[in-house]
Length: 145
Image (cartoon, rainbow, N blue to C red):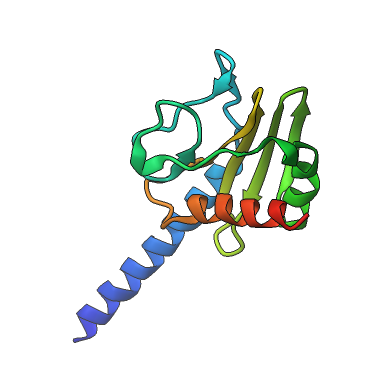
């Protein structure tokens, strides 16, 4: 029994340590930016959502209305994010989780008739729906402005 407890404690310590490491690792880097005039495509992992064309259905979200463009920086800040770039038709922001300090990138691209959005984790495979929920919360906040 004592051996099982020791193994359990070691597994918990290694697991938490791994999460802390990934959290720290995610704090380096920047949003991927635009590629050929569009937001970078999502990787195949389920920790990214995007409204850009050709996004797989399981990662697809609707674009935001064109009229909300000017409100995006203030709403991002109100929701606890930090705008890192605001250049012409492109805005990049970072959101950091409270527990392990995972950093996610949220990007916006203004097109002729809509605002495309991409939200993605910098590290890991699954985000347990956090990026999809963030885009939904942004949509709600922008609709209430």
